[in-house]
Length: 108
Length: 410
Image (cartoon, rainbow over all chains, first blue to last red; front, side, top):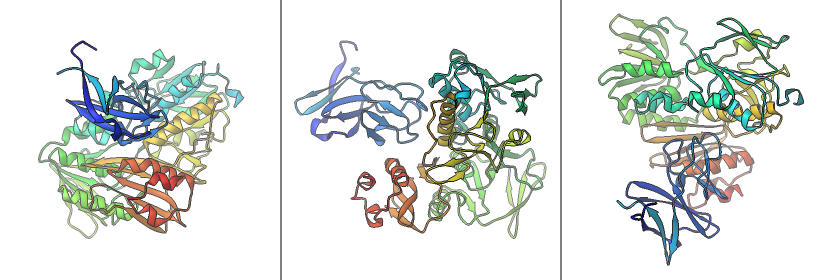
């Protein structure tokens, strides 16, 4: 990440309960936020196999399942968990600042 | 299955979706011996769902449908032979004969020969203005014809026919669909869903004519006339036919493998020959969840049965036991369907068919046996779990959107 990358507030911390997820858009970037046992994680929201938002799918433990074809990713690493997933999704730096969730994205 | 220890040569006959995933799964299961993957086409294994949608629309290149690039197979130590048509199996010698000459010996043989488009057994059913859609070459040939203002007659309102209709409309083609049954998708879905799709297509300008029997296709030299019993002929520039698929069983049948509209296998993909297995569209396989044999022409079955049977061959297998699951995309609608019910005694709506998103459940004796989601893919995961659980559910709760489906699964 370059120095001009910025932390951007994308959601209130209270908006995502434990075991839930939420999709947000920053500029043209679609981002998935997850709450795993109180910890917030973020990845790209678009599945790497077909056009679908992971946050329309199913959060199962520490994996998210795509709603279209049931491909799965490990949330903490973005790792694709086998067919039909051709490649991993990117993880995105995320932090909780006060009552807000912030992600680090390239400044536009 | 100790006779297929990890140094054995495994030959996979058919480099489609099932064959490709099976080869991949053999390596992932730790199989160290030779793997040969024989494909009749000149493409490495690919996924078929985009063929009637994104590829026909011209939105993607055909390479985008490949499971892996061609060079990936060599990197995995998989000997992928394309354009290699097999013509016979000598079970005693354990050899597969190739059309081009020569043969290949195997220790275990996996048949993933797939299915082909069923041909219309009528005069004119194979004319040069008549198209079928099964492989990449079919799609590219049809796509060339689908330009603005062209008239296309489609015979069959199943998944393929309706997907072609939706894609063709987007390309500005005038579309008439002719279907024998009273509603679309009659072979696989509840009539309520067929009605919903009929309304959708008509609203998008598709001339959908149901309950009509085609008797012949006439090519006048400049156009085609699709003759129907007791009605006006449909005049078009081209005809596309989607009336189902038939399994490529001939090579197995000739070798004495048991076939019953599909190669007959158990939940591990085993045929009546201990050295020969089958997976994918070509099989009629025992589904332990349904308690009967089914033949499925779908992506999930190709991928997951391919993987399951490969693992069984590698000796680390669990039974292939999944609730059958299908999907289609037409216009702005994503339809997903779970279950393969042969009967049901009531339906429960979760939402209304006039809403942008809803789910329809089919029940038998209080249990959910099938579900269809319309733009409601999030319900599908729990619908599949409900079907698999075989639980008696309260229809009122099922139809109440205030009740979470996951709470009914528990």
